[in-house]
Image 1 (cartoon, rainbow, N blue to C red):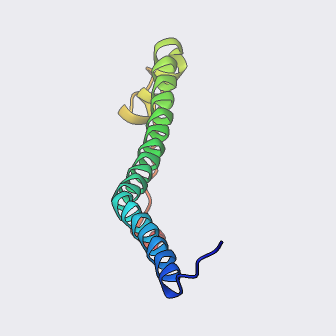
Image 2: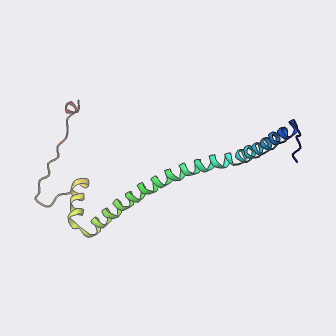
Image 3: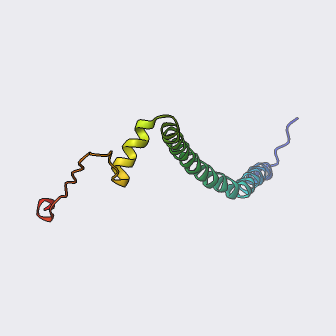
Length: 104
């Protein structure tokens, strides 16, 4: 036997739906700051990973230069000639300078 409560059954269903909706909104508002914090931290992590890869590449280049300077005398000689202007005995060194008018 079904008893018709009229408007009260519909109001009860509406209240239950509104309570469930309120609970879901409360849960969402509780976790929203954590979601934003997670996004900020993920962005920062991505930037730090990019910096790490860049620094690792610089490290590899510097290790290659150190290895070349330690094991290859021709590299040391080339750098001494280029950077310090050294030359072998009885060798003439010619330096070319660019004029200010050619830079226009």
